[in-house]
Image (cartoon, rainbow, N blue to C red; front, side):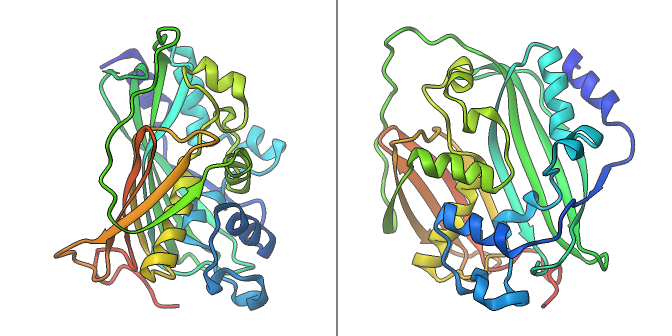
Length: 305
């Protein structure tokens, strides 16, 4: 067991972290997020009033601290692991995997609480980015009546950056485009607006100098922003207006100026009908692969609202 693994185990050995959102689900937050990532489902439009539904891709954002005092008083599990990683020489961080399940709708006025814990820590790994370890953090979300509304599993790589050779070009890769292709430009505004609208304050999504120090050529699209764009594409091109499940894996990062080509195909034999496999790629290769479904794959674990 590495020193970092042992430190994480000791620091998170208590009961799961429990926090209640500082603010209820709001029309402003939903509308800002949808505008940032291009989500146009009528379920999320503000003219629905109290029936405005929060997108599944916002699940993790509601209970995250939104004020300086909130972050100081109750640091997130990720913030605590991040601090431990720095102490062990892992100064950089990048998200790699993201899984969402939505069991019930969240509407304007609902108040979300979360249980959060470290689910898994990998052995030390050596990757193209550098040497480090993967940590999976799990969440369970409930609303004010204690009904579980969703779950999240987020896998992050904490690492020591590998120095790139000066002038080394980024490799390109041939990508097979699937069906119903659609292009989305990753502007600098989209990268920053997506991170801020999802309450993600990791500097690698906002600060060029920090991104460069992590061995990246520029700021990168956050995994939550990618999740939102995948769900929005699933709605526009495949009719999944209100997804209940997303399983996403990141590959090549997306920088400002990249153009993402989204495409997809039905998943044959999937437990949940109308499940779609989605791919997003740019000039350097595949940015992400994902599976989007209208509901979670486990029968009976989603309540109708």
